[in-house]
Length: 445
Image (cartoon, rainbow, N blue to C red; front, side, top):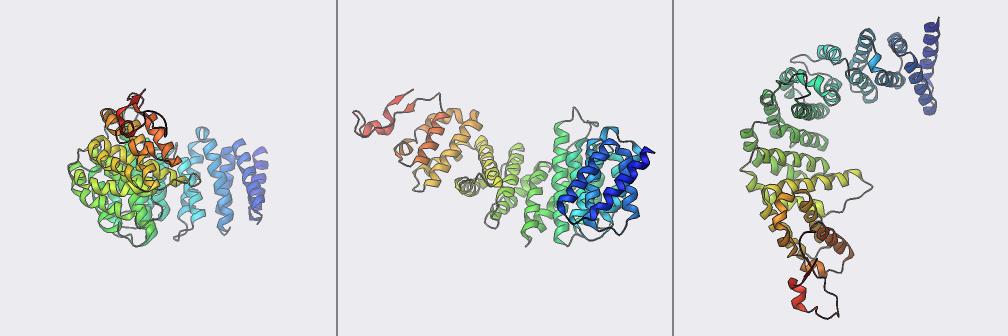
């Protein structure tokens, strides 16, 4: 009797999803979630039956029901039984791929249900999803996106499937002609690579500690060739940025000799994209990953790329970050990370590039340079410790600078060098502050 009442109440709520008022729709969603949290198995099965019986229900209304199902699954995953999980997986898979066209909101909602269930029932989800991922047949956009998001949300569960998925995926790259399909392939490769790295970094907790980086290197290397060789110059900016986002994580899985071979083309390609994209964060993030991978293999060719890297990165950090634009601050963080990586291997050349910039007539250049110096002192202490007196010897001009932004940046640099005697700041008109004193002959602690 109670189940019958719950079914009728849930059905009444789902009938009401056709209301056009968004506030009402959100209230219905909240009510369905509350009901589902009280009786998760019963309500999830009722939702399944409702969507299958109302096959013609418009997708905006189906989205509300799918969102409720995702929420109920997330909040009751530990108590969800296998039978209900199987019902939910089958429904979500059907909803996700029912239309061959991409209907973002609807199919994303269905994909999110699969990802939620996959937190615990990854084998069941993959058993269903792999039926829609067959060799030689271009898969649905959201099948790939679901794989990618599962790789993020359940690393230990998903990585064992990735060798098989990558093997099936590689021939499909040449079949992807539409921009959105190229983008989602890149999205998947990006998150697969990140997931593999996380798995390898936590082998002591992994279900299969025998997994090795080189078991993925061949497939990732082949995919890397397609992305860098064919897709990185795509006319559509969104595709180029998707390629860039994937290349960074993929570099960490490439064999060292292959990465070394690709660097002379890879780094100039990324640096060239700064001129084409108003939003540089994805480029800077990928570049920092590529530099880190290059340093890890002891790259010899990176030395020849250094001047181009420094000359391109420096203006990025000199452009003021807008606190109201999150990606602006994130870009500064990634650019500073690039400087740290380079300074750890090439401290003398990095300083030889930066320190003369303190004599620039441009305020932004002086402030940006001081910001990088402070960051390097803090983030690369082993390399910078011996360089602190040398850095301090270049503070003569900044000490005389009347610009308050430069002074503030200078104070931050000096504060990062507490163990080195600090040059006395000249006070106009005071005794003993002649030219000789200003040149750095006098110090105080």
